[in-house]
Amino acid sequence: MSNQKDLVYLCYVTNGQLWLADHNLPLISKNQLDKWIKASYVIGRYDEHEVVYAYEHHNAAETELDSLRSLLHLPSELFNLAGKAIQLDYMRNTQQFCSRCGLQNHFDATHPAMLCPSCHAVHYPRVSPCVIVAVKKGGQILLAHHPRHKNGMYTVIAGFVEAGETLEQCVAREVMEETGIEVSNIRYFDSQPWAFPSNLMMGFIADYESGEINPDYEELTDAQWFDVDDLPLVAPEGTIARRLIEAVKG
Image (cartoon, rainbow, N blue to C red; front, side, top):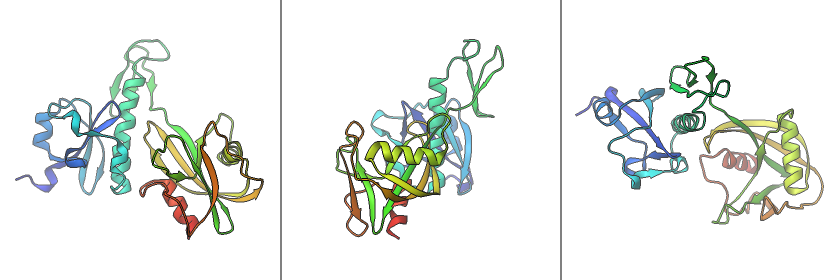
């Protein structure tokens, strides 16, 4: 039987999915790791165990691969490390060639980054900044439904930060573009790495200033004010969207 200190969390990634034995992040012995994995890289620690990233695995079955979303029940520290593995794998697959000289890069876990062996350029993971905002109006919250949410789930407004834009400007622009609402008193709430595939969500709470809801139907199927005590199906626990909604509910 393995000593607890000999166990590691394995984040084996392929095609943006994780190998999840028994629908959870595998906690395996270092002996198993050496047998199954050609190369693995320590990307952090959780609960006194190393967390390792790998992309070649002898025993992983297709039926045991699943999205990072299925791990939202995990503690945030471990969830974020699994997301880090996803983002490193995305970097390894999308930054294979040097943008300076065109030669093939290799993965270097010490940075972690992709390194060019010719011109020695270091290519770090590309992280896309996004804002996500809960808009309050008295005892109501602004929620939207996106076409991709087939289960009818509503959530708060979010979008990518544009070049030359502050986070607060992005919040105001995204809310206006998607719903026609003007906001004020924009204040920072919290952040969450969101490896779908390489985003960083920065959460805000804002107050309603003016305007009537006029959804952008190219982005949304619906947007409404909801009483905080009578909400529809909303974003799942473990997401910053849910924490924003809960914060507004008080």
